Length: 233
Image (cartoon, rainbow, N blue to C red; front, side, top):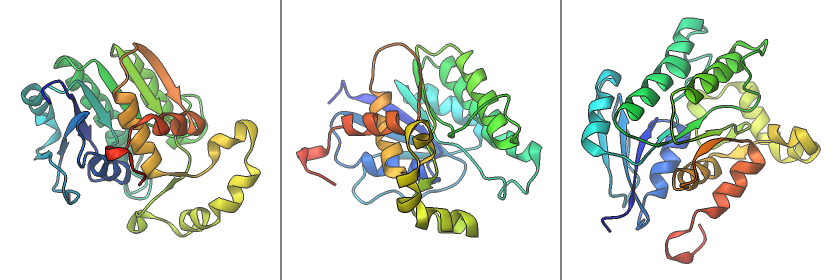
């Protein structure tokens, strides 16, 4: 279908990016391509292209592929950055903003960014402060529609990156989620598949504006994405 929404994905090698690619299997309502710095395994049956290039060239990929929307699922961890503030900012702030500016320069009007619960430019936590600062700067770029997702602890197959306490938190999350109610419900763990479904569903929305989605909003958006063939997953 020539009128299918064209979505670009950045962060394909991560947990959420991988789930977004799985959603592209047998879709007729959108098409997907991804850009990354290294190769990534594509889901079986998916029809999409993965462009491997240095970040400085990603804008050229956007220019050639002409996406209607871009999903940015970039992110590292404090551990993987070597616990170095500059290295962490280089990915979670500078690279995210470079991607957003490159997309805007190529006419992209819709941008979906995965951030974190608790993101706040005034936070005492360096991690959350960087996330909050990045959100603020994304809002200044001027997309017609900007969706920021703030999920809680992500559940999904990413064991190599998990610390002992994080793995324990995921195992106990069905129990701890029961005690996180009201405003604290935003800190509940959430399946990466739901975050991916929400990202795609929001990329397909046409209404302009800036929107922030915490766990409850993410789950509502995830339920809006039609399942191919009308069957459950």
